[in-house]
Image 1: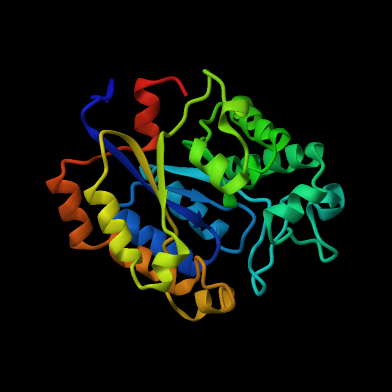
Image 2 (image 1 turned 90 degrees about the vertical axis):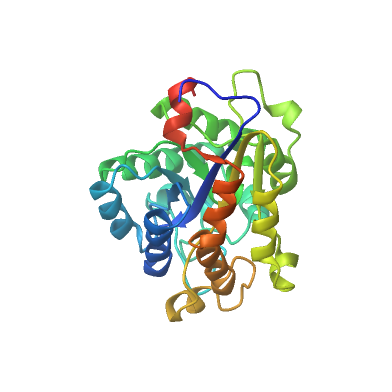
Length: 284
């Protein structure tokens, strides 16, 4: 793809959290191989990382990035930094695990320790043979302050890897004013879509995805999803966390491997694009 047609709809269907566990990996692979998902990102510090890295080494044609992780929202699946907790003490709790939310991270994190851990996570992915097309941020925690967001951008420049930037994620999730932190050199995915907990509670998450696809306007869009199976492993991890829990992730898996999803994409002539394809027409 040499350039974008301003009247066309371009979409990346992106699976977060690959590498979290075996269930997440199996569902992500199914969505890549049999579904409409055309990009994913991998958590390098979780129990399923080596399994997912091995798969992507054998299947490098699947677009993949590194899902930089500084928080751990789960109670029964605790994980922490790639570096020793003693090397980044401001990023971990008393047990050496990441904090559970962005607020606690912001209250404690020292930027220099964030910088070292971010670099270590990217390097671990490279050392395991990943060929990352981009980096993004788990829970968008690297957008929680101006200093952390700048570390995020610097990491992209240092490693020569595009960074997921979106004004809506910055303002809605992190509370930053995009006008104060973004400049003309930043490449932004203009439209990023993701499910809402209210839709899940009302059993309308699949309907949300369908409506989103049916109503996309011209331009570049990203749909963020979290495929996994509603199985024993995933129920254990998410037992008290229905928001992005195992049942939610099963909906993601089912919808984005469905004939209905493929039909809408085909009927609306939605052009699926990956990070790699984006790099072919613009220097990111």
